[in-house]
Image 1: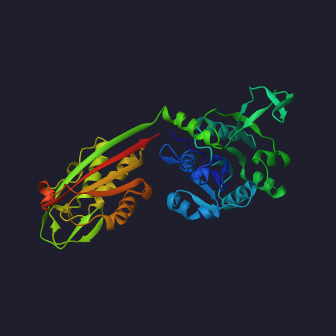
Image 2: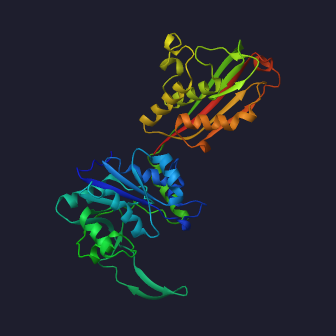
Image 3: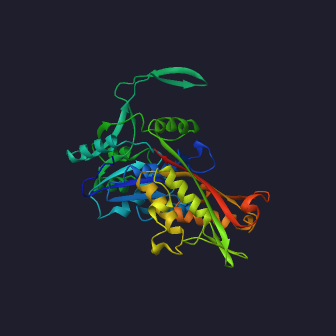
Amino acid sequence: MTVTAPPGYAAIVTAAGRGTRAGGGEPKQWRDLAGRSILARSLDAFAGFDRVVLVVHPDDMARAIRDFAGGVTIVTGGDTRAASVMAGLHALEGQATHVLIHDGARPLVGDAVIQGVIDALQGGAPAAAPALPVSDALWKGAGGAVTGTTPRDGLFRAQTPQGFALDQISNAHRLHPHDAADDVELALKAGIPVAITPGSEDNLKITFPADFARAERILGTAMDIRLGNGYDVHAFGPGNHVWLCGVQIAHEAGLVGHSDADVGMHALTDAIYGALAEGDIGRHFPPSDPQWKGADSAIFLAHAADLARERGFTFGNADVTLICEMPKIGPHAQAMQARLAQIMGVDASRISVKATTSERLGFTGRREGIAAIATAALIKA
């Protein structure tokens, strides 16, 4: 389930930080978490909102547009968290009455947490934010030793999303433009009362390397992983080129088939259908149907990839092996990888294309045709 926001409610997801404490060599929000980026999972939680603004670092703008354009409004953040939130608020001026502001590094926020904030705002609270009461003893320390204790009564661990009337939180940011730990801090400085709503232990903020393992354990309880394989063969026939994995390669012969005979793409398409228990290409695009005569095999692969997404799956990876003596695949492998990734709508790093020979044995060894095998891994978290 996804929370459906009331009319006038928008969301801002902040992702302009660098997140260096999490390690990994790239900002934590872009790192993989069980097959999808942390940021993609954070945005998924607000799919039921009519307006979602994503705030990113200038260096990440091209990547954000590639991954999320069309579904969200993407704006450039500032040097501080407060400046980034203000950029998101500016993008919503005149287009919303209320806003939920969420940290893009909290990819496991649940529907109940979001709904709790909305219910509090709908009930008349000018602001609301989820939190968990502190249950552990609190110490003060220095030099590796305990120097004192702090009462935990009335203390809470703050979470996001934090919800506000849009005009009030925008005014709070204008009155206090300096940075703050979160938007509740600025709301309180502006005299806006904030209701506490139920948080969740699963709504962790990815901050340190160990947090990835914890998040994966949480996701693992509901993860659905599917593997499929595909195999296809096409014989050589008249022609002066072949289509392999979406790339046209000059050759002394063509490949014979009802469509464009792209043996690599056919094997990969069948691998995806297999992972979904959806049969093969022939079930969806019968060779007896004349409309598929000479068709671009990208149609078949795109259909399989779209079907996987409709079922809630993302691609873990896909691997294609072409088996032939000729033509040489190595010079074209990178172009094939890029073309398959484009058709499937995934990052090229998730696609592998390689080739081997059959040591001059069998029909491929006699240069009578080309075979291909493929494997696809689908993940639903």
